[in-house]
Length: 225
Image (cartoon, rainbow, N blue to C red; front, side, top):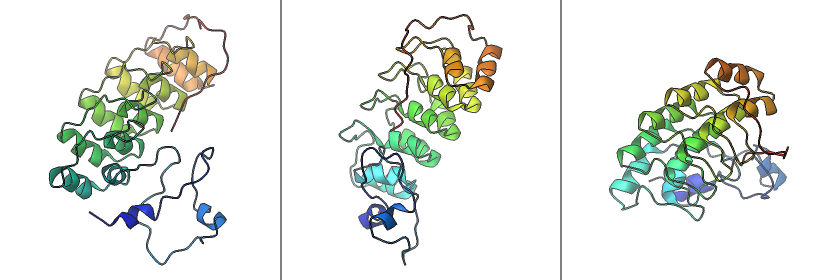
């Protein structure tokens, strides 16, 4: 496996409230923007940065290292961190379909929940990672699983306005009228998020346009970390 520094060099802890690292972040810390060492991997998104070796390798798409760690070094494919995130969660969140395929070939738990109730499928849908979604669905990932706010992968795809992922989910019998804890169906959520093209798409696929929002609460948000 590549030395840990290859991964750690591109992971900088910042304020918890920040959402993303940018290439200017090192400069703000007084560490400079340029490095004599070629950057191999993208920066992690804040809030979903990995901890263990296996998770880090999965996050950057290092297929060879993931395979070696599992096959030769005894790392368990379903090993999770303190937030119950497995390598499959990280591979799906960071869009590494080849790693997803490899982990599934080692019988990774496809519907495992993290501490927010998110499955790898939900993480892929949150990040618009179409190929990862397709792979998971092909391997029988459950599209009906809800996170701890009652959102399915379809709700997240709708919130993102991603009709390609929504279409894949509906082809696998995702519940087009399933409700969140606020009583929002995917169709109502599309209207709430001003995703009019998505709302029309859902109508064309049989969504119930007359469903009623049961809750009078107006605040709604998705955890994307």
